[in-house]
Length: 201
Image (cartoon, rainbow, N blue to C red; front, top):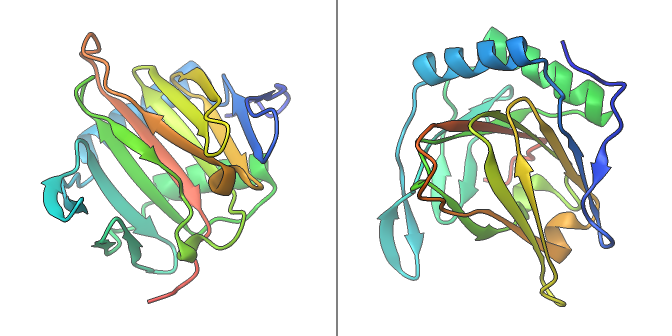
């Protein structure tokens, strides 16, 4: 189902790793997962705290955990939706590719180019130190930016349908990342970010 033999492209020159597999899933497999998630995932739009104000996230999302763990980020406590056989399939594929274990996934739906994710790092305490994050992209390609916290060096790439991005090492400490708005994009994108979460609540 996935192309483990394909060499990954390393995006980061230093201070961590971000390896991109462009064709991790075959086109047919990626199409199947995309359509099933788009139609059947219980999408939510949640409010987060930014600069002391409550605002709606500019995307839809759901949180899922094998161990029924909640997740706290940006002042928002997420309780897990149901874990499905489809998520188990994708979890296994990511674990094999990353040679790491995961117990949770945050799934985001970018409905079109108006939906986005601002500069941030997946460095919550519950992710542990130097976490491995496995991100599968489905649907419309979206630009993905990485910016070094100190030097401000910025790296840009496209996350395409069926691709996998593995971020590890110091990548969450030394770099920020974002999915910027892109007005011309009219089609949806889904991404699933698998990680190991420790209970800190």
